[in-house]
Length: 124
Image (cartoon, rainbow, N blue to C red; front, top):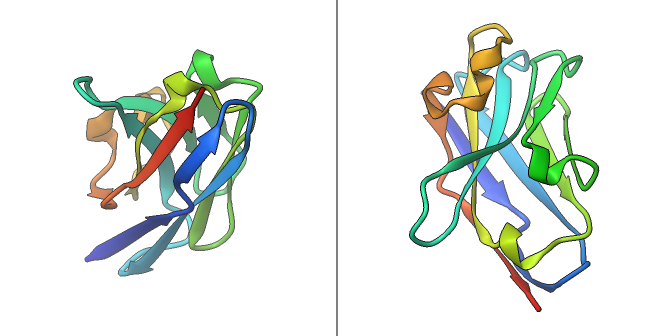
């Protein structure tokens, strides 16, 4: 079993920065591909960013390109979020999966394990 724990969320003003962390424990390998998704109230969960197990490949949704950066160490994945906007307000979830990197990383079903989420609120 793999456990994922997100942290780092909070309430910030427009233009501020936050760094989210996702720490993996249990029967996890440091080469798992990792992803960040978010879900705003009344909306479906959407892809934000993903990184391959080696860290060599990354993918971002267009709305966060240039503002968010995903990175990882062995068992912790980070999402550095700069220039935050009210539309970034959501619960952010990290996902993990043992399969190889592929275009499918933008889909929820590409991840077998999920954390509980951390709330990010951006005020005007």
